[in-house]
Image 1 (cartoon, helix red, strand yellow):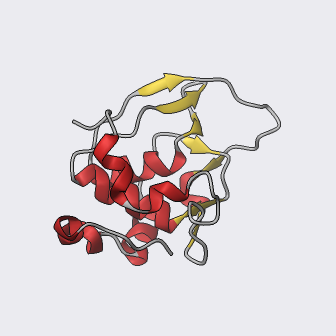
Image 2: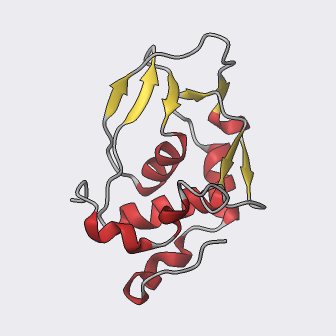
Length: 135
């Protein structure tokens, strides 16, 4: 897993554990549906910590006012943190089968960002110093 966090951010590092996330996902009345069957714990944990520090990572793209088509990890992290977020209308493939967020599985075995060279930079906070969408 990615572990290169700045010392000053460690106070919020442990605010989200898998039990808290699973409870939230399973027991919250979600405003939208998803096509994802799994989401990555490490990604949600990083986004959650960063939004608590004041960073924002863009709108959630939603089709037909009901289906998150881009931003599933952000949606969960923003909602858990109580952060208002922008919704942008988007299109979807109608072959996608919508499910309730309560049905997703949280993957704790893999860090999807770390396993993807294009997204590995998001594993540590170095990119935040040049990120312009923070509040």
